[in-house]
Amino acid sequence: MPASGGGRLPVPRPPLPAPRAGCVSGPGSQPCPSVLPTWFWHPYLGGTRTARGTPAPIWDSAGLQGAEPALEVMGTKPVERYKALCAVVIDTGSGHTRSGLAGDEQPRSVVPSRAGGSPVLTHGVVTDWDGLEELWHRILYQELGVCPEEVAVLATDAPLSPIANREKVAELLFEGFGVPAMLVLPRSLLAAYSYGHTAGVVVGSGAGTSYAAGVQEGYALPHATFRLDVAGDALTLYLGRLLGSRGVHLDADPLRRLKETCCCVLPGAGGARPLTPPGTSGPLLGDERFRCPEALLAPAALGLPGPGLLEQAALSLRRCGGPPGRPPPRLLLAGGTTLLRGFAGRLAAELGVPPEAAPRRRVAAWLGGSLAASLDAFQDAWVPRDAYGEGGPAAVHPRCC
Image (spheres, rainbow, N blue to C red):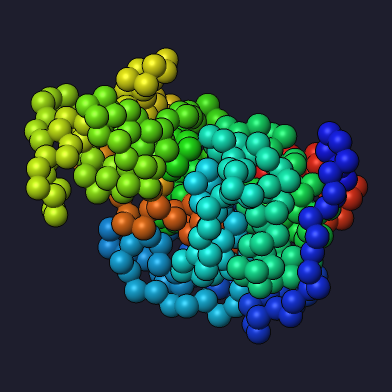
């Protein structure tokens, strides 16, 4: 990979390991067999249509329409394991990187998004490209045990991230790892796929970034997408400040666990009551239990201007809505911070749209990528190496933007 801004050396690579039996293939080798039911259709990635030319139904309250299921889509429906795997899916978030093979029902590897002890992303945007290369090198060769030269790679991207981010990912994958094909898709779109939908409003919140993003017919809608740089890490720090103001000081990991197990989003503005967690002799959290997650909905508590995630979701719903009388768009939750108790209920109460809140939404973006990359028709969606050779980083614009 060429130096960027001053002579960096490529990451040393060990001899190429033998791929796991039956776990890698890719463009240029044997075709990837169809591993999804024929009802899945996407206007860009492909699939099948109904006789009238409209997208075939994907999922409803009654279950799958038509063919038998091939993947558990963030619910409790029966699953059938995929017959083949032909791509690697890497979801690098601000907190953790989840990776695995296309068709897997869960990531094979979950590691901190750090290199040399330092984070490689800040609020969803890569700030240490050398560190990202080192991280992905370890994931591909050691965690997954695959040869990058023999697999296509689907990577995720934060909503509204700079286009230069996707160009640099293409440069890293093609020139640094020599992959035959790659693609970058926004997490909001992939999260919708994990629910089996190609349209709706995704409300996501992970470690470094939160967002409300509209998706329509399999495309992310920039005009209906909003980002907020308040998420799980910021809430953990805020909880530490709140407790510190009354003399309680905890390290980051205990604070995070306390936030995840004890904090609660109130149904609306109101009072709070002390909480005595199991195993403690007295109240550890008072109104901090409620004030902490409220900062996600009202970032002014952190001294940040602008609307909170609730207002962003309302605006995204309005911009994705149809004519009067038409049902509102689906509301889909993604990311670990949306697992806070009371979060889904608060959105339902204030937006008037009950959200779909799957228990496994912490890995929604990765699971949606695993689903999409397993489509037989998806093989036409990859950005191939020869296209990159002809057009350079700009080759990603038509497909990764």
